[in-house]
Amino acid sequence: MKGDGHEDHPLLGRLVRDIASGTEGNLSAVVCEKLPTYTGPPRTTRLAYIRPKGGGPELSTALGNIEPIGAT
Image 1: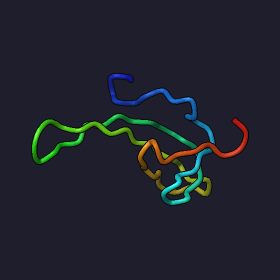
Image 2: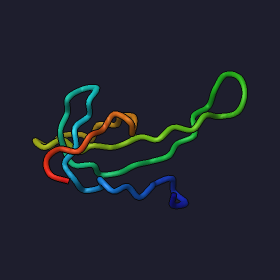
Image 3: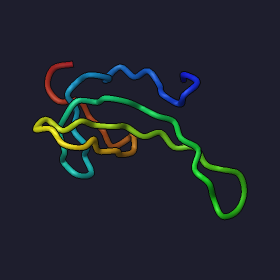
Image 4: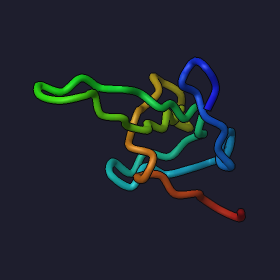
């Protein structure tokens, strides 16, 4: 992980699908974020950012929700 929370990932720049929404596009970033909780320490989550094929704003989703499209 880099100091800004961004992580290297083998699918960066590749075509992926968000299985939760069905959105397809290029994986543009994977970011590790600490989220506050009401009790206890912050929890850590890893988010994937997908730039849709047709353009528009990036979609964020849990990293576990992405799958590659096409040949690997």
